[in-house]
Amino acid sequence: MIDLLKNFAAYLHYPFVLYALGTGTMIALCSALLGVPLVLKRFSFIGDGLAHVAFGAMAVASVLGMTQDIWIVLPVTVLSAILLLYGNRHSMIQGDAAIAVISVGALSIGYLLMSLFTRSPNLSGDVCTTLFGSVAILTLTPMQFILCLLLSIGTLVFYFLFYRRIFTMTFDADFAQASGINIRRDNLLLAVVIAVIIVLAMNLAGTLLVSALVVLPALSAMRVCRSFRGVTLMSAIISVFCALVGMFISIGASTPIGATVVVVNLTIFVLLAIVGWLC
Image 1 (cartoon, rainbow, N blue to C red):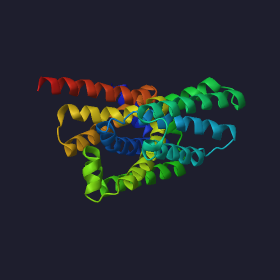
Image 2 (image 1 turned 180 degrees about the horizontal axis):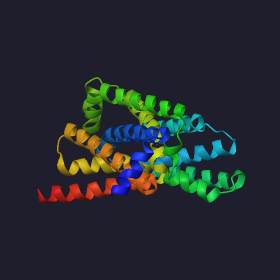
Image 3 (image 1 turned 180 degrees about the vertical axis):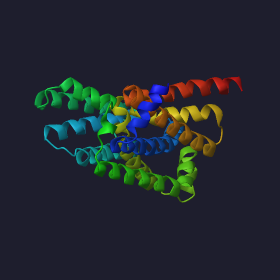
Image 4 (image 1 turned 90 degrees about the vertical axis):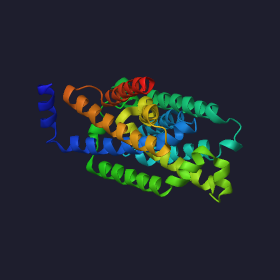
């Protein structure tokens, strides 16, 4: 344990580690806040779907030779979120079936494009890194860090400004509409914000594990809290704690960051589930 602390203290002198800790904390906080209404509305699977869409967009950017792939990934993911959350009622395929179709299709197309056109000598390693986010957050440039920070702050501002509307729409959309809330507009805004956070969270947990950052903190908080505000606050605390502990363990012990953070989240969920059951 002492050696682990020494290793971590030594790494803190490197700017890229500080970028990773700051970005990871903000991503975890935003993911937890948005995860609560998604879990309560039984739409938490959208995290997987949008992450797979982002993987497909990243593959296209890679084939085109773009180094700053976020300018393709972000618009494509936002558009997909709008189609799923905003246009779901008017589509031929609805609900979780629509998410499954988009998810599997994007993942398959992305891997196929990377297999056919990639110039990388280590395709398997690149795909594994993208899927599990092993080191992505440790390679952020200062500009990428600033962009992630600004987008995260924008998400927090949106959430707190629309907190009451999110609460009302989560539990009773019909009442919210009768109260004068523009449900279609607010769902559109929520879809955009969710897509942004999913794209950012891929830096921390990768494509396959990103939904855990959205779902697990909310589920953990629901084991011990009953009110919406209590669940939201506890979810945010749990998510930030797990992200920091996971990154601390990962950097000190050289384990994959995304998987470590998710395992810490899973451990907290099991512990709080036991506490909730006993109490």
